[in-house]
Image (cartoon, rainbow, N blue to C red; front, side):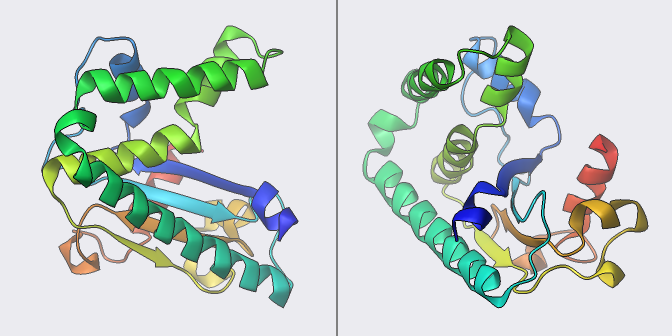
Length: 198
């Protein structure tokens, strides 16, 4: 399980300019919410980022991690809902992000400014909170979908095969189910985003 944990990656792929919005919010150039109510927020968890998942034990580990991630999201959303009037506002949210940024800065003292900025805007703790906070603010539903086996070449766009074949993927959206998405399949927007940044 340790290998799967250290070889995992989380991010937000919709809206595609979230990093810019998040940076503006942290720097007080924009207020919360910085995602509109009618926008889709898409989040992903990629397991086996650098190494393919081939062992059945690793597949089970991914299932366990995915389940814990979903449980943690549910728990955090319940907490935010309980304190919505005090915790879902620009000042409180920005303060929480800045505390996390200070922690990242201490842990990564060797990073230069540019590398530190990238690390902050890709931080799983900040991005998870962003997803949860917008769901609570707009009183939205959400769902996660785990691809339960390593991705096969046949379902991956040809230019992404090297990055995704043999990896496992979970995506989440701020709608109740995949029928609310205007895409041919649940992975299409993730593939589109990855192709643009590739």
